[in-house]
Amino acid sequence: MRTINIIAAKRDGRELAAEDISRIILGYTTGEVTDYQMSAFLMAVFIRGMSLAETSAMTKAMVESGAVLDLSRITGTKVDKHSTGGVGDKTTLVVVPILANCGLKVPKMSGRGLGFTGGTLDKLESIPDFNTALTPEEIIEQVNNIGAAIAGQTHDIVPADKKIYALRDVTATVESIPLIAASIMSKKIACSSDVILLDVKVGSGAFVGDLPRARELSETMIAIGTNLDRRVGAVITDMNQPLGNAVGNSLEVIEAIDTLQGGGPSDFRELCVELSAVMLYMAEQLMSLNECRLAAKTSLESGKALEKFRQIIAAQRGDPDIASNTSLLPQAKYCREVMSEESGIVSEINCSRVGQAASILGAGRARKEDSIDHAAGIIVRKKIGDRVEKSEQLAILHTNNKSSISEAEKMLKSAYILSNAAAVPPLIYEKIY
Ligand code: URA
Image (cartoon, rainbow, N blue to C red; front, side, top):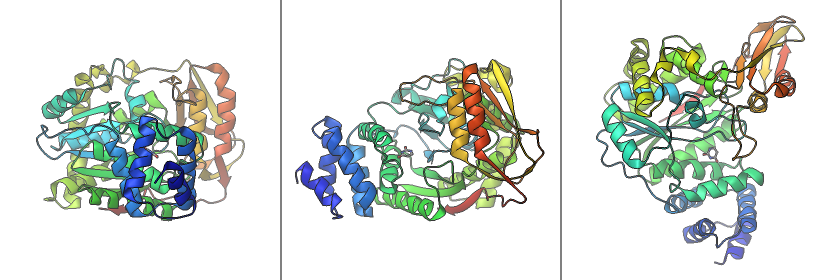
């Protein structure tokens, strides 16, 4: 079919053949299909949806738009984890060292922040001199030597996603299940791990707001992975409030190190242990989930995961001393306490507003090419279910840009709702593996 006919067929709700999906995706990657045609196609998909066969075909075409990482020279079971994006989500910084310490091979490809959500690469780059631009050869060598590497995707992996995501971002077509599923799974498939665990975030700080849609997204991604011969699991986790207390790059690295040192906020710690346990279980198949949980906990409590994190930092030319001295990380010049204007129990936190407040302070980007302030962010002091008195601290803002503070404070205050009672959301809704 010609491009215009493919768009019209989707607009009219017809199911597309794999070859037509491949034609429009590959045509867009090479520039034959224009931005305005792709925008129309994406909006048609957003409104009409896609069948599983179509979503799988789209994923496959996106993988074929670029190179596939050849990890066959890594010995052992290769595992990968992917979060659909959240606020304060720093689990990779803790889960990767736990898994490597437990003997799995973790060639982790991470991304930068999208919208109000943070990205692992930005967090890691707050570590002085940390290099996230590893070549495939360097990744393979590092993973064979110390068990893990955390790097940015090379530019030749799924180029279709880079172009399509940029277009979705400006055409109101991000929050579509088939488009999110194809975007995430194409990158995971091209990165060639044997076992993939998806951390599907649900709530006011996630791309998916409710549990039925989170379930649909999880099941779609698992089915795509299964069709393409991968072992994929999903854990649906809460994003109705920030994970842990720290939001913002350097602040999140500090919180991850606290956790690797045996402390850290209990919700964050528990999620790291649970994600690690499910991945160990999926990869090893020899231990029960409880034994895997114990192995993950022991790795944290013994300090061995912290030592692994130090090795990863050193291998990627960062300053490993930050693992014992977090004052070496970027610190903001200005801090402001945000005080509550009333008393009550925190019953809701609009988590995307917390992410937006952190972005205003400099922790995120309004446009892809913007630079970020690694020291900027928020320490959240009150979470859902906590009692707050009038004039008590809700949060502390950190920034190097003094003029951003008032706007960020307003945004943060607007995120909080206080009432007489609160239902604390569960940390984990469902596990599918
Ligand atoms: N993360 C991705 O990589 N792609 C999406 O579409 C949404 C979240």
